[in-house]
Length: 68
Image (cartoon, one colour):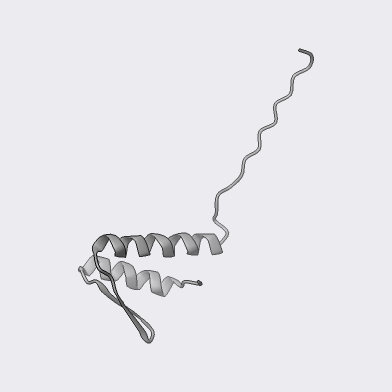
C-alpha cells in the first residue's frame, strides 16, 4: 500500500494528543491501544523510507592475499 506524509502526520498528531481515532480523507480508523498506533507509525515510516529509496545499503568487502 502506498502511504503519504499526510497520513503519517495524522498518525503522529493522534499519538501526540492521545487520540486513538485517525481520519484519512473519507476513512476513519480507531486503534485499540497506543502500541498499535505506534506500530502503524513505524510501518508508514518504513514504507515511506523504502519508496524514497532510503532502504538498507549493501557493503561488499573484498580481501585478497597472495600465497598461502
